[in-house]
Length: 468
Ligand SMILES: Cc1ncc(COP(=O)(O)O)c(C=O)c1O
Image 1 (cartoon, protein in one colour):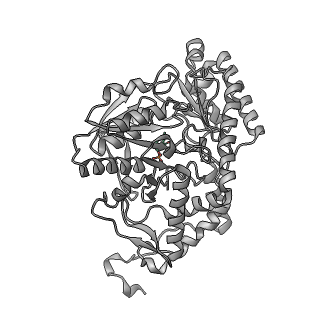
Image 2 (image 1 turned 120 degrees about the vertical axis):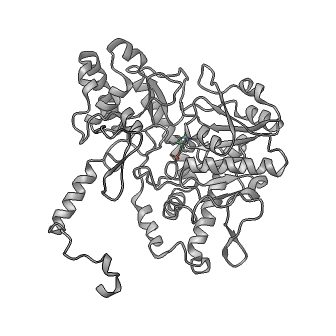
Image 3 (image 1 turned 30 degrees about the horizontal axis):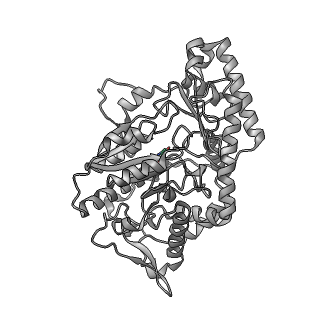
């Protein structure tokens, strides 16, 4: 066997591997896994991320992918082609779109794909001058970033005092340079964009298109369709609405669905169904081309497909209703402790609190509250987002939490708020129980320490005297 490898690659002595028994290895990794907070360990109300429970049956079903290789000929894997075809079909039904692609690896990647489709569509019509994309001030940062890298000029539109976009706000942009708008509905404040139909009418009359950021689809899945609201391109985050794991930032999946008019611009190949089989079809000349090496994160797609089939239409409708109910329950119970950012009577699947007055009174910030919550064993809500709310704490309980868990969270927030009134320093120094305490986030972002293969650290923008 040693002869099979070049001599210079062979070891001249045995590797110094630790001699440990299986139970020791299992205990080591189990202990390590518990140092990370996960949805399997506790409540995870991270707003806009839809950290719902990931049913274990999905993982079991996804094991069918163990026997597949991305380079194997399509005719040898008709089963997975059928799963891809039917997943797109179901997502189209849910969103009110006509066809789609599973290639994008995340929501942001879906946005980029959608923006490339916008560009290709306008170019095909001799309207390459349409370069202006409108993005509300409550939008996720990936929206303007995706539009920008796809070659658009981003214009921010201000939300009104109720946290939503007024149709009149977009009127000044209705010119022949307008490409369209990116909207999240419900938006990141957990509020339904009530003027969406009028906005769609105005954008379409002006020759533009509408992009739906589906990060918050969980609030309306099974009940309302982006297609009926006038959207032309939609992305969905399978790792949010369709219960697949977020797993430390991935693997995600952000399928993109489009109207019939935009179908020729989709990335290829796509899966087609003929009378007797499913097959891969190469992209036509109008396609934006591939956006992924293969067909996307197929294991994630299989998990989402299993979820879709197990929930069914009624189940999905129940999911959105329950996620909205849970959010409204928590909002009503928490707003007397930390004020709500908006006075809307009802929120959708998530809501935003503003710790501004608590901070003015006690000096304790949204970040301090978030850090102290970790000591109580719950993940913190999203903080300082959306950017248009001071001291924002964005809470999304999801439908998979019980009333007991919600009540327990309320008790914990109450305890943290009374600590803030009594002893602000206790919160400013938190957390005390996590493996890593507070990190210097600004420094981490400005001077990342990157390592390669256990080798010496490669510093970006840091002087050699910087020691982390
Ligand atoms: C509103 C919104 N849009 C877009 C994204 C980006 O999605 P992804 O993280 O899958 O790239 C997120 C992520 O949380 C989001 O909340």
